[in-house]
Image 1 (cartoon, rainbow, N blue to C red):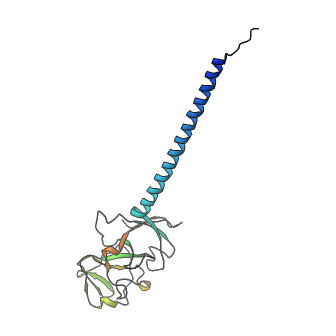
Image 2 (tube, rainbow, N blue to C red; image 1 turned 90 degrees about the horizontal axis):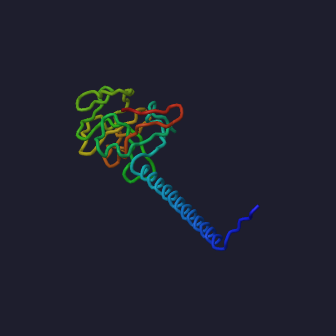
Image 3 (cartoon, rainbow, N blue to C red; image 1 turned 120 degrees about the vertical axis):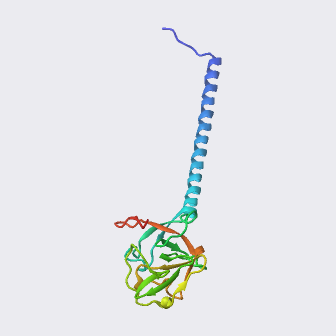
Length: 201
């Protein structure tokens, strides 16, 4: 049997090739780590932008929107809903009162800018016509500000809670009409387990 010997030159060449492979693997590893970090950073930025500019979850506090929304329900608010369209009558909106950064109110819009809002025989009357709603509202026992008709100004909205007997809303002087700048988005989906689904249109 003949033995094969590796010359010193061949051994040096093989060793150099091994070092080149190690350097190549190291460069590939650094490239993969850099790519992974870039993906994580991009995901974090997009996630922040998504929450900040597009959607937000809010927990309903209090019974004012029952039976549509209950205390403790978690809803998704589309913060871009009114960037390209107007607020519509019947929309459920998230309101952040001027001067407050602590909480959101969830209310339903029934009066739009320029509308005349009143209560007649326990019912809301908008522009001399009874409010035509596909949601159930109890008779109004205390008209409060609506003892006389109120005409909304430019960029003003009249909002209520569906649970009229347990809602502080635009009927009362302590709450009043809502400015357009206070409406931060449209409530369109409920996440609450067992009651999950779209809300309204």
